[in-house]
Amino acid sequence: MIKLDNVVATYTTQRGHVNAVDGVDLEIPDSMILGIAGESGCGKSTLMKVIYGDTGFPLDLSAGSVNYGFDNDRGQPVTSKNIQKEWFKRISYIPQSSMSSLNPVVRIRHQFTDYPATSKNKAETLEQVRTFIQKLGLPPEAIDAYPHQLSGGMRQRIMVAMATFQQPEIILADEPTTALDVVVQKDILMLLMELQKEMKNTIIFVSHDMGVHYQLTDRMMIMYAAKAVEYADTADIFREPLHPYTLMLTNSLPTIGDDRARAGLPGSPPSLWEPPVGCRFAPRCPLATDLCRTVEPQLAQHRPGRFSACHYAESVPQLKETIGHAPRLSDVARDPAKLFADVESALKLDEALELATKVEEPAR
Ligand SMILES: Nc1ncnc2c1ncn2[C@@H]1O[C@H](COP(=O)(O)OP(=O)(O)O)[C@@H](O)[C@H]1O
Ligand code: SF4
Ligand SMILES: [Mg+2]
Image (cartoon, rainbow, N blue to C red; front, side, top):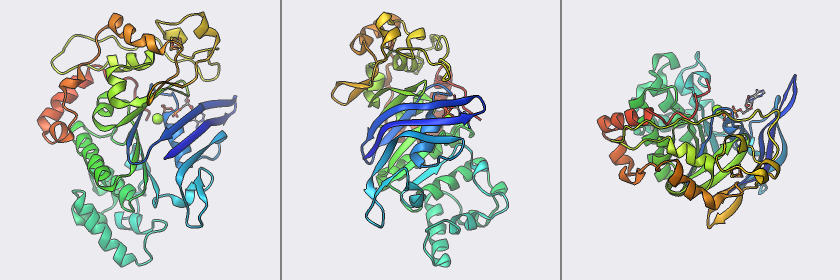
């Protein structure tokens, strides 16, 4: 279990300090796919950096802690302070763009064998890499190529291979397919799902595409303005959200065959420099009262396993009735084989999703 305890992550800028993650408490059980969603700038990537232990100027873990639920070789509990020694071995990170992470002047095989902590015997490691990337649908010769000689999809497959080669317990994926075309996206996501089924790692997955979250994740955390506002099983998030913001996000997802236009998300998130007093969502919330504008709601358990930071969490299901029907996603089988195996249906699904799922422009 990964445990985030009141995590506050702060950027130091010329203008001063800004909290991009502001008091996140979260317990993530092992071997699950956790999805993180929320509009651009709400702190998703910052939270991923904190969980990876990749802080350093200008980013600082200014309060709180992350515990990963396992000990290191010396028998000490691994926390955000010493997780760096476990990179690749027990925790790995798949970035949005392979171009920024693969060294352009180094052949793929050296990027693997120069890994920290791979087996000392390079020839043996190389053979293992060759076999492994073949299993991941890449030609074994790919390891002799330079990054630019491979297609974007192949490079991202290489990133997935690097992140999973040593079978780490935790894999972080921050919009891992945003830069790729639709068909390749589906392939890579399916590959990740298959590997997760086999290796039983915990995957923390950030995407701006609610449709992908629906298909891929077991639980979801919804972020708004540096805070966690809802945390629950993905099925519950879509069926009956307990936070108005989640409702607005999920409501933007069309159902296949339903071509009625959906309202986008009206308004925009508050500035993190001067967040509103009380609930940060109040300026956009149809349920907001004076209580909301004065007292900040805390993330609390309203039903077993269902957390929401809303004073009126139990009124949200009624709100759903008034602002429109929820997506009938039960119509869509949540079976990756059905959704992804057949490229044509994947394309249709994507056309349908393209209408309204883009809750944010992906950060470049
Ligand atoms: N290097 C940085 N310096 C200062 N502020 C930053 C930096 N990186 C991100 N931020 C700010 O932190 C907030 C959260 O950013 P980020 O975690 O990238 O959000 P997301 O991934 O959800 O789009 C944003 O308001 C962004 O402007
Ligand atoms: S606390 Fe109030 S303003 Fe915030 S989401 Fe709930 S109802 Fe809306
Ligand atoms: Mg981001």
